[in-house]
Image (cartoon, rainbow, N blue to C red):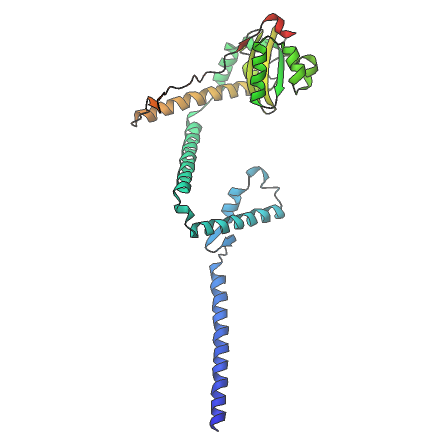
Length: 305
């Protein structure tokens, strides 16, 4: 009988142990489920990626056409980065002085950039009256075409080397045929007579301020780096209308307004702070370099060969 009681007690203990284990597993599952936020699209421990976070990660121009597979990739990359981030923090890497300094510099630049963007947005304005006044004052630019040659290369170093060869008397035509990546290379870089709005905007801003037989460069565009030469000018029978020139004029005035607003903002901030810069460092005198554009290279008549 005692054996039966002992056996019954043993069976009871086993039942209780199994039940206890089952309860423990159920509690863990409930805790995990409770820790998973219903608002989270992805989660790593307590870190969550929510709908608003995802929207900020997707460029506005593709939000309407992004696919489910692309969103899945974004969520996967977020999880992978967060796993690495959390592990790095657990190992104390966020307290590493070198990393802390980099984070500080990134924060410093980000805040400065955001503040500047906000100030430019509130300070910079261009009115229709200002654009019409510019068009009237600079009307001579819209009644002429400029005869242009150019040499297009991949790097600024190549463009600088071409300028040096021009200074040595090597002809523009020769260098264009040898080095230019543009389709006009076979014609010595000659792209003919062009009026306002008919050439690469990066070139136009420079070309119409140049004198005849003057060379400038390097000028950077989306295609590479240019060295340009103005061959001559001619009047046009039909000037570019204000409506056709309006967008270009707006960009010119916006840039001028932004530069002026930036100078004024920095002047205001300087009056509100104590600013000091040393005159020398490591035995070197400190002085700012001339921020004006590169000095144009004058071309002799025989340089067109």
